[in-house]
Length: 393
Ligand code: NDP
Ligand code: GDR
Image: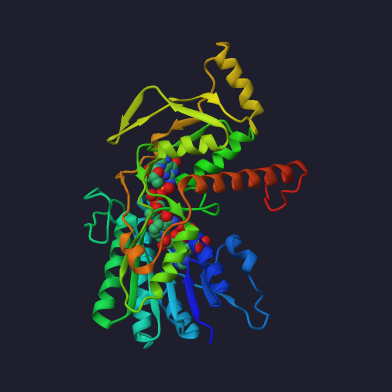
């Protein structure tokens, strides 16, 4: 008998990688997708199967974490062996604009799934993975952060996820559900949402490299994150549900890097050496840098003939006021920030046998070259007048 998995958030970064991984492992995968006014399945189109086919191993259902009846019906129909609850309003900054919705989807949404398992008498059958997050740690209490570090979330998102974390623990203790939290630190990939800082940077660097954009506007450059590759992290999710006993695990690389250093590494990948100099600006308690970034020297100029000209001018003193590559826009500062995340994944290493394969340099390289390919494809289509999907062009 093939195992059956249900993934909420299957159209997101992690859902797409996990679906592909489980199908390769021989699972039948069911996914919940939201109805949107335009297609939102781009990340899973390559594994999509028409409903008319027999013996499908990917089956999609319309649904929403804010709709209990819908979730209960789908779980009843699917009778899953494993549920991966990955759906969420996952953008920290946006959660400050939509706090009530975030609480409903990310917090109470988890309760709806746990309660459905209980009401449908699936406690013995169905294991559940909850997508918990390093945002739970928030204001730094200790570093590196472990499963025992106290939580102090700093955003409506983090607080909604705090409820989801504890309700998962509570259902495990109260009703003996096989319910586990993966406390995952930031993980990225070429299919990361474009508004998270890593993808925003790699995408914009690709555009800078190709002469499509001059300046990248960012927020707080001093925050530090422990970044891994989503492909490594979805394997940990699966391992967590293969354990006899449910438990909670930190999944992280143990290495932390500032946004500023991420920018420098991304610049290097396209042969652009970025130096941060100049004055700082203090706003909302952040000291950050504004209009301060210049590129000083170049290594391989593969993509950058347009920039080469500007640098030549600058070096010869002909034109010193060219546009900076990075400019800080304080409107991206968050009302409350998480300054430093670095995880200790010893427990996962010892019990699950999990360890990451990618390092940050390899991750950045993969992301930036994928974005360069995408931008080139886009430019090519535009040139040929083939952007037929955009109604207004
Ligand atoms: P994404 O933002 O890429 O994907 C989120 C998914 O949730 C999408 O499929 C989205 O659908 C879906 N979704 C959003 N709201 C609802 C809703 N109300 N009902 C049903 N589905 C909904 O996130 P990631 O893949 O990066 O992250 C997966 C999970 O892991 C999330 O819960 C996130 O909070 C958590 N997490 C992520 C980390 C990371 O670094 N990536 C780290 C730690 C935790 P649609 O495509 O229609 O928008
Ligand atoms: P995060 O990721 O908030 O850690 O949440 P994000 O990439 O949005 O921010 C990381 C850090 O970068 C700073 N930053 C900027 N962020 C964005 N988005 N845009 C900018 O222009 C910018 N400039 C600086 C932020 O202030 C922050 O300090 C992610 C999400 O995937 C969550 O769902 C997940 O739970 C956590 O990671 C772990």
